[in-house]
Length: 325
Image (tube, rainbow, N blue to C red; front, side, top):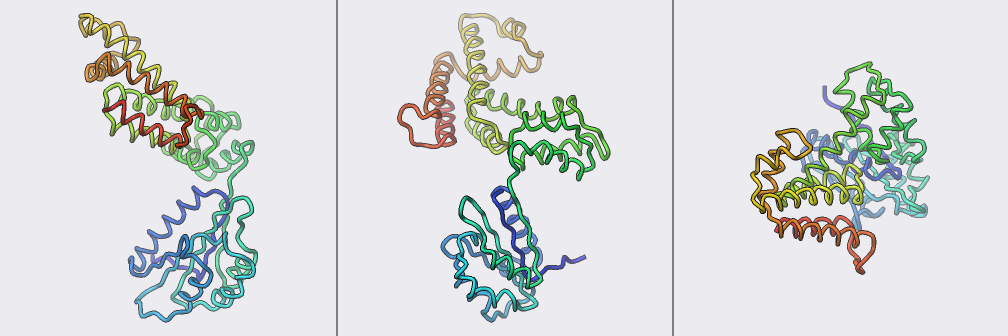
């Protein structure tokens, strides 16, 4: 069944990540409906009231529904609405305009635009960031919508494990729904088994890639972890510990100790020990010592030391490249 579209949509709020997700989904839906030629995007300096009003008023010979995506209406002023209001209220039947407002501080979507979309029979929805202390209750509600019964204590543990990013919390809840099935009751044990281990395993993947000087894998793992909301300080702790363990193994191997003996002395399962020693053998004592120094420098720079003006992620990616070189 083909989807039906309203003449206008307004999606706004201060949860910019969620707004970005909705814009991407809507654009994909519009492309399936009308193809890329049926979509016009207004963003940045191009997203002015005048340009959008002119585009909505222009004649077009395109076949099928016409979509206009306007990103940045939080910058529009109330006085500008006299230009756009009459156009929005009399849209052609084969046209859909979608307004996105990324609110922050005093940057707010004008009330008159909200009223115009409502008068046009459009749809209005908000994506607001939940306050940190309200996240456990929010998580319980999201879990219920996914068919799960999330205990309040488990919801608090989920926030502690995953962090305060709503998209990341929702992804973990979706994972729980897939793992446990509809109607499952989720307690602390399930949170510990499924949620905590996910980030922890990926953190070790990042650290092991650095031990093996695999820059591409390390960068990919680092960016995924940051996208999930992991803090750089926590990642550096894991990386530094793994590099020190690797240096100890490298020194034992360099001193002539058989690899089999080294593996038996590691506090990890046999297969994990075998992989770890293999990663160490792709490096050497000098390289691992240099890596530990680079991580120490990164920790200092990320705290504002050494006069660095670069962002954390830029510093981290540069450090990964130096370790892998």
